[in-house]
Image (cartoon, rainbow, N blue to C red; front, side, top):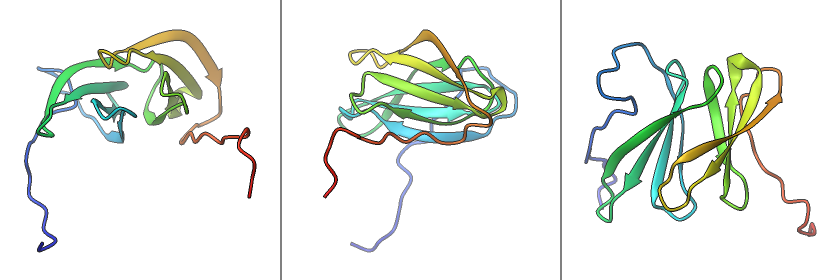
Length: 129
């Protein structure tokens, strides 16, 4: 081991033909390791990739976050839902995760939050040691 990194793949988190500006944000891997999600802050979307057995990605689709400037997002502890912090829209939106396809399905839930930038879940059911 020499501690060096080498590029294995370059793949866009934006749909084919998109020519606008974009700033990437959060990158998450699904709890089962089958899908990768990447935030696009000026495109206002989350790109969805499948992860092949060899570790390479395949772009599947992108999902509009129903907000502006998705700074951060996270899975709930069950892995069934994904919450998107839409920083400039001052809201958090909720998506159901299709665990077979990786697709995000908007639930219609918006939670107003001033300038959300991160979401972390705290397990209140587990006793503290």
